[in-house]
Length: 162
View: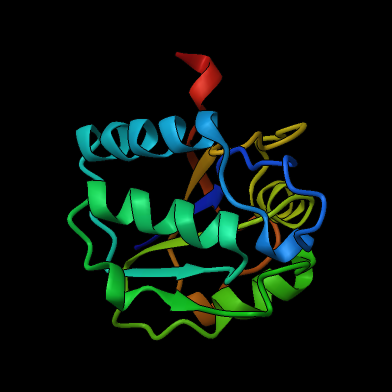
């Protein structure tokens, strides 16, 4: 069995218009939501073996904060530039390339790609994965065999739910 956690970056700041979209940092709410969601995942027993993130500042910061809450070594996070602006199809290609030795994987990224991917992989429709939202999906096959509607939906968590 393979478990995939799709995590949208926490709330980011629009305070500095001179920054590129790629460089936007987390705002105060994002800095509060990320550790909260990390603790929630820890309570659920989530223990990722591999963490992959967009290198965009808001996504990489979210990944580092949540990884820390899960006792995952931040230096082991893999940053993949293809996640930034990645379509659902591109994200599926990244997931299909994960080594089979990993059974529990977290992928930190952006909308609309994450929501599209989640909706394509399971029959549980989600209108929008909000900032710092997490969708957990389980697969009975190898990463390379993942297809549309092949996932079992496990849970959907987000900060405003609490």
